[in-house]
Length: 111
Image (cartoon, rainbow, N blue to C red; front, side, top):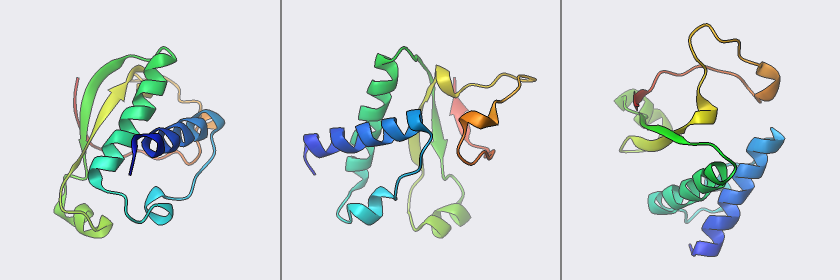
């Protein structure tokens, strides 16, 4: 996958975030996608968010349970960036109208 495709897909995910819309899984539309591609797409989306004023506040590790890895068909945890726009402080109301399908999931984060 080339850089233009990474940018196109990252931009698509960013637009979906802003528009609060869902997109078909990238793995279904881009069957040859690699883990490296996924991280490059993520980097593009993070760049779009930081360009819009968000700041990096930490990093996260997801899919750390073997049960979840097996369920998702992966063999390693995933890593991500935490941005200021992702934070909800203790006791703060969460406007669920700004979310597509609100859920909570525990993940390891380093702030």
